Length: 293
Image (tube, rainbow, N blue to C red; front, side):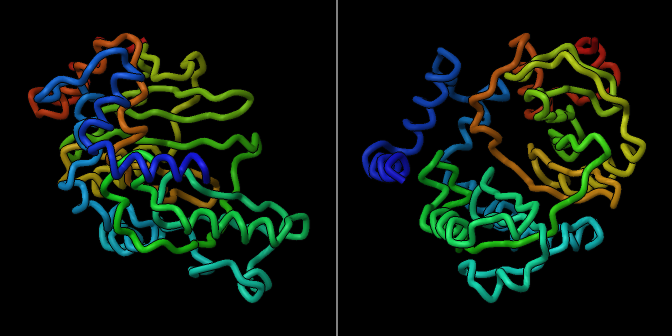
């Protein structure tokens, strides 16, 4: 809370655009250009932009469910148990032994409850109240979150493979087409594995190590179809999916991932993605070949 309070006060003093440029300078060691050219510069330009408020419905984890159901079908939605302004004892008693609690008005906030009997109810209430008391806009000046009415969501905890490894499939899409896929593996240590749309591994590091490889998912074709339907109409959006034994499930739509602070090695890949964003080139098998392992 103290850090949040400082950020909230800073939003009254430091304009959004200057804040975005300062964040970019801190992480990349250079100022973003105007107009932006690189992928990370374009993400930074979105930070604090009033134009981003039109994306609110896609970033509200409650409202976006209607969008997803309309575009790809309800079967891709993680089952919802409860939606509430606060975790109450009545809700707690109705919830199953395992579930996920998260707020609808931010990104990266969630709590996985594997065994309700082993949890401290009062501590979870305090966690939920803390989330609801904060406006996610003040954290990083992402205007698409600014006016989302905060609520709590309680959803099914997805079951994973026999390896019990949490795997996220994040599809970076440009003009409705997949540019690259980054797969997040958190155990035994965090990695971002990068692939093109055809599951060719890329020789690119995206902040975290990229020295593993995993087999092409059997349902990759279905995931690609789902992603491109969700990404249709956007210059750039990252579309997150989970693939578990029960099927494919929608995670979230992200328009300013890490607000452009994560860099690439080699840095030329940042320029390449900027050209995908502008529409100057397309992510085809031929254009992606230069980045493959």
